[in-house]
Image 1: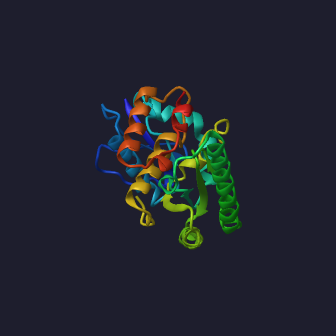
Image 2 (image 1 turned 45 degrees about the vertical axis):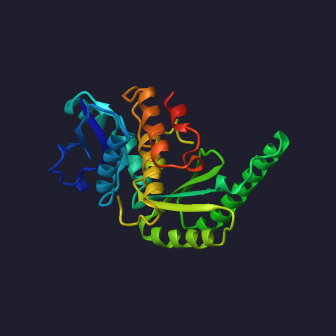
Image 3 (image 1 turned 90 degrees about the vertical axis):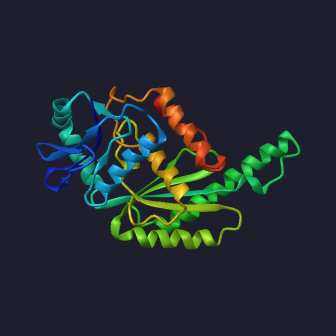
Length: 207
Length: 65
């Protein structure tokens, strides 16, 4: 069994010569594959992510979700053949782009426990509104500078994934961090640039 | 990881793990991670790296279902 890391253009496929990684090519696409660890752990997931990030720092990729495997290299090549048109189209959609991750949340340690159930609900509504306002304000910063912005599921926090052309990454980070500096009640973080994980899902899965 | 990371290392690790586990291309029927396996990865992450308001609920588990 082999682990599937990412798909890229055949003509842009990197040279990989360590950690058991290999590049399988078929048609216009290539797939980065490697051995499947016998365990599932946080460290394994991070190691997977670091391989993808290493490749994505040089070329456009479609990262696979951690845990995606094929029986062997021939099965992986078959996947490349079966999905060539779909994956090529998705590669074009993220061409030249990276992903920035923005989080905003109110520190829970700031507040005393709510005095009643009603007060607790009021607090939740207030936090939700605060995050909606933050989303609007960040959205104005991103307008015209991001190809796509997705709001991801979050529990009393704002989580945005932004598909950004690589040459815009530093500018957007600065803009969001400047906005964050003006926030007195929210903790804000910006991380990336990541491989475009949040923008390559199957159409039926895209949120 | 890329040269652009400027946030704290812990938050960056959380964001990378969120993406590695919960996003990316999925091939129907080929995800090998068990639900319990995802739980272990994510809960382990919460315990070690993330304050509760950062980790949030496990939408990842919902997706895995």
